[in-house]
Length: 201
Image: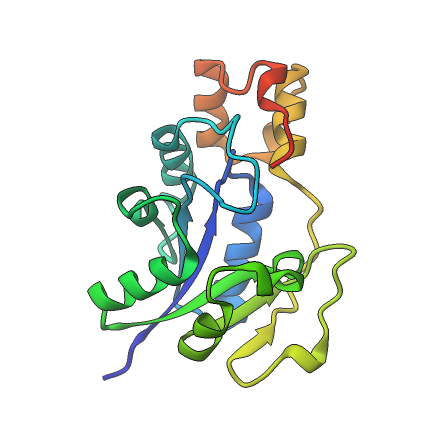
């Protein structure tokens, strides 16, 4: 059976922006993935957990942003698993319920640099493929790559959710940094309209 090559792009997406979307688009079109799943994380054990927009709202913002692209899918799997959520648990759970798919973990080179701090990193490496995308100031060590761990030659887009939240809190018009459907909800509902949501995560 030929399995569907599915990339798992996990994050807080607080909020999702064109950097996330452009990267996922590139990985589908140029790195051999059939689909990219945006997995909404409720809590990252290695980051600050306060000041996150409600998870159901972050899920909605991603859902409307990817609605028109058939290669994208949003997943709430980590919102249903025990917390704190760990990547190894998420990947194994997805593999168990989707035996028709071949899952690849998508992470930035910044996370790859500290991958040894993750829960059971060797188990992830042994069981799943990893696709690393570039982040500024975090070059990828070629010696860490293998047949199942590879570097994507994706364009480097220096856009962060921290920047987006700060700009929204300052009342900036950043319509072209967000998908129009997401931006419409953010503006209509007054999301991220305060300095309390500008903490880096």
